Image 1 (cartoon, each protein chain N blue to C red):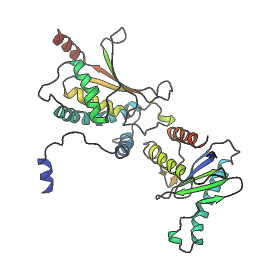
Image 2 (cartoon, helix red, strand yellow):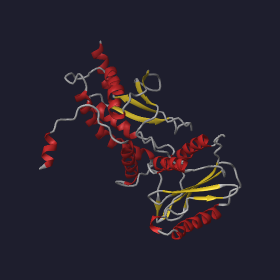
Image 3 (cartoon, rainbow over the protein chains, first blue to last red):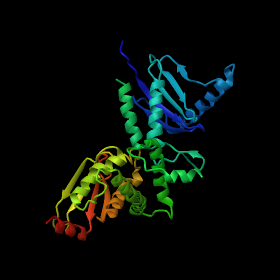
Image 4 (cartoon, chains in turn orange, brown):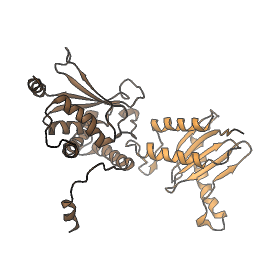
Length: 145
Length: 197
């Protein structure tokens, strides 16, 4: 059957647990900004704690998939500690290709942008790069038929 | 002792390519550096002129290298149009791996007493990853390339003022096309007319 992959939203959390980017692709009723930040921080904490459930915590990757009835939630953590999270349609197999592509876009259009400051006075800065948004739109169009 | 051997090696022939990512990170640092050193830039034109200065130093060296590697390294180009074509094709190819998209002459009229030449590039490689935030909307990081062109033209005895204009900053379109406007000093144009007669 058709690969009806629908990506609902994308979050990016920096390595200290702060939400630096959130984007919604299907117009769902988003939480307000403060709740979003709190939820992201909670997930960051849960992700760290979840490693302890494994028999070998140092080799455990933490939460990667959350399977629910109306959606599936994927988390990809890069070597630098940045987490890319997305929620998709429940029939979606694996978002690793999608999150890989987002990671590539992030390292290209955000990190190589001279105007983006990763960290100011110890506080992670939100990503406000127009080109990143545009490229992300194009990528998601490929994945959302 | 190893360093001495390095200087005795011949200049490598042919193309040498550099990773775009590596250059992009260095260029990103360059843009941030020129904003604050030697003093915080108080206007966009000061910022751009600093990038221009760095490009100038690159330009003089690129000219020597490109001429050395080109087929007729023994003759010096004295014709204006031929030299601009040389820039559009050979120099662009050395720097960016492709030729510049266009070379246009804008004839003199009542607003400008001299002819102006434009070199267009539809997507400058140098600022491929740069996206201006709203507060620095009109900053043109291609000022670096304009500086390279100015260095090349000065080194070849065609002194000119080169400025970079982005279509994306003026008029709000999303095209990344950049136009390098070359305004030669009057004596260069007069000399060219004299020589072509």
